[in-house]
Amino acid sequence: EIVLLEGNTAIKLTYGAGGIHSVNKNETYEEDDVNYILTSDVASMYPNGMINHQLFRFKSVLKRFSEIKDERVEAKKNKEKSKDALFKLILNGTSGLLDQEFSWLYYPEGAMKLRLLGQLVVTLVIERLVLALQTQDNLKLAAMVDCYVALLGDKALLHGLIAAEKIRSAL
Image (cartoon, rainbow, N blue to C red; front, side, top):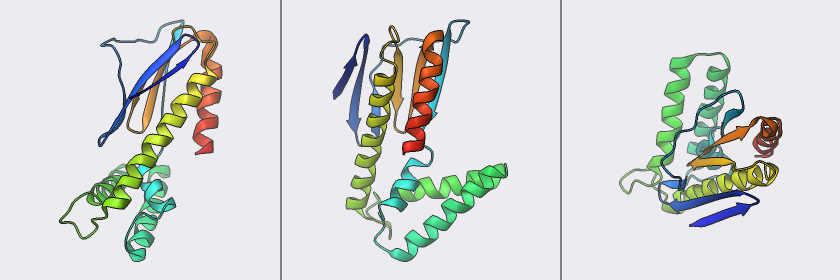
């Protein structure tokens, strides 16, 4: 567990095999005239990590996996929903096969690298968001695997959007 604390904002994060998760009270937040909900995720975090850090035992698999990811990006851009969904399932399912002992893609070292990389990336994103929004009173944050949700007061909304965009483009 780790607690990020800056100004009036604290977020407790837990780390495990299932990814990173924030520990939040059981509360419901809703948008209104003053508060906005901002959500963001790291697009294709696991597939990109697998490609960028070459987390396959076989180069031919890495090459085909990269091609499928490119095809998915194109399908999503062209709003081909069924094709996009199919490629997303293939990409995300393949990351899970790195952990399966009886899969021909089994590569436990690669799976561990992938999970740790993902947890570090999301921690960095949250840390940067907390720092960028440190003037926000009682900022509410939640994190899960590859995304975060923030409840922002009106004054902080623009700063939050700018910070989120800088973070996303930096990854």
